[in-house]
Image 1: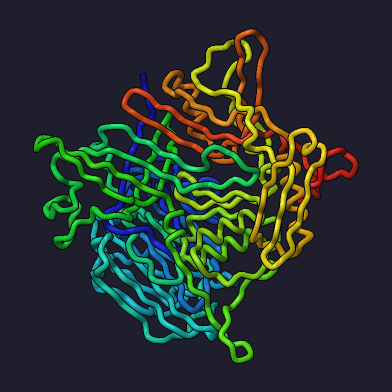
Image 2 (image 1 turned 135 degrees about the vertical axis):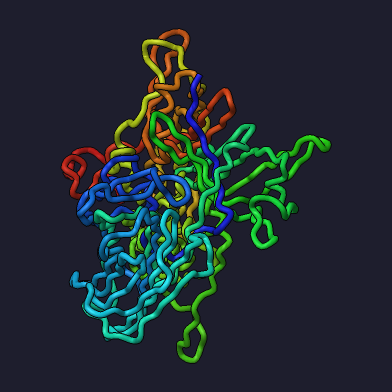
Length: 625
């Protein structure tokens, strides 16, 4: 029996970065495949907006684990570009890792920064003496240069910082770190205050892999930010020490409400600690720097698996504890417990910005009337959450103003409840916000993505049962926006048949009482009738690996699946459901995946503006809001 190859990695040399607006690790690509705008994003980070030439993903060299980028063609230039990079303030920072194979014959471009009009602000060049030189414009005036040659045959980190004011005047800085994980630079240079062309500061960038007959380099870990970035940190493979089961769980538990609340994802891994490498009191271990153990809480950790050449992300988060246990003096094991980024957002307590109004100190307010997606972005920015680790949809409802105070997660969840949307962290550690209408406009929610069961046989490698309780039945809803009057609505026929069950939504961030009433009417519509449903599916993936692993590992929260059962006595039971929670229980001999489900029965066609079918008045479908 073959199971996916699972890997456990942690980051001991640096914690996750914040404030980065664009980043790309190339790890989500395929070795030997040409990098394109279409395949450069996803698990690699932010996709490039344009690419010149034919750079390739490669595993010949990579900083840390995964892949890097290189130019396979001598005598040509190739570059990968980000455009319209919006950053506040006067500072624009860049980071890249490079692995120089051999010295170039002539001068080669490494990086080019352009302004809003696409004119060149500055360029970084590598000369045949292996010295990095920073230029004003493309190559107009030498602004700053290092004195230490870029070493051959090893990874180095290069950082740039432009500080250019609104008049286009300022400085350019360049750092070289021959120890790429270090916070101490090997060489540094800064320009005098200069008038930079095409500014005031860069908004578009090109990462070059120019190559001549003399030499070339690999590139990894490209990033942009409004502050100096620092090392990315390297992933350390802990897989050889993972001796027992691995479990991950993310998303929602059993669905008992029309408003889905997603919980923080968790993971548990058991590691062999017989050599005390994971013992934080062992100052001679491999994860010790300057006599201090790096085996501490809040270390980034990720769990991935590979099946049929495809890498799937099961979990990414932060270590809660390294729980050391011993069996006499012959064996030691560490249980690693981790939680995803929801923990970080919950722990971020924000104080309001105070302003003086009529002689009184009051909190500053922001964003009145902005849609819920824009509000999620604003909250994440206030919490310092990386722009590279988020996927935010445009919201369907406008929000009241916010003072951006309190813990960030509570405010994010309140906005999501007001939208009736979805907020969770995916297996790559990215915060995902889906708007209310995604469930009946996104293809992965409107079309069945995988079917489990077969109407021709009762044999199926999964466990599920029908649930007929009243957990999802609500036929009266009371909704109240912050500062508004409670709005009550219900379905009289349902109340007559099933008695009254009330669901309450309070502190909603909607702008008007009318919007609160519409919110209540929508919740009544989707929950007024009892459901006969499958609310959990336990899949024994090891029983049919070639069929089940591709179907299971590719699934994400919000995907629509179909379950088919052929019960004793004849007939077929078929139900569509949305995945609301995903858990994996993995041992050396079996792999069980558990999906928590929400019935899709009430989420069929709604009246939707601009939709060719559901946007036609009188077609019999209910209104959405």
